[in-house]
Length: 250
View: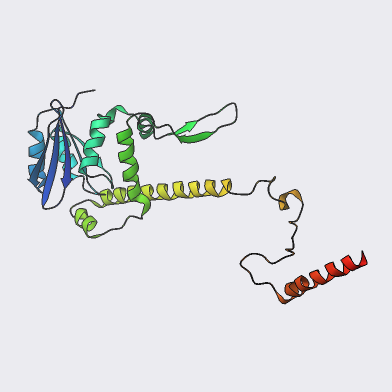
């Protein structure tokens, strides 16, 4: 894997772009404000000490800058919703070259985001995530995933980013947004069903499951914080008289 010399995280907007730069040798951190034009941002990234790795949040359709950087020979990772400048730089620093992972599943294994497994024979048991690899990268991705708990909407910012994009690009990007949202919903529903199953009464503690009905009990005396009824008061008044009668008979 080629060692990256300059890491660049971009906060891209229509009017301006903020670049957060990290020198891979000295570790020096710097911030630059750039014009919003794609050509100027690409020219700035091309002049940085190579090899350069750039990451930015493009929204569903903002891939024009990525295409220009790729044509200029600058490595670029386009982040999904929930990833901003600091998160993008952090992921690039922790993971490095994303191309070395053949599939998303292998990247998830590398970061410890896959469920643990304890299987034997035909029995398969899965537990909590393994939590191997970079703890910082794992935290960044988990925090970013929270942004997909709400359904995607086409707001003013997204409509502005649609301008100049092909219909095919918009359709593919919107499909990706919908897919990530449905994955979140399915995961939440699965976790809720698991919790509900764990709270169900067991056969040993449920009388109904053992073929017996719960036995109702009657309280003979008044319970605390409750006024006795007329019948209970009369019964209490008769008890001393019965005790005296028993004593006389003896």
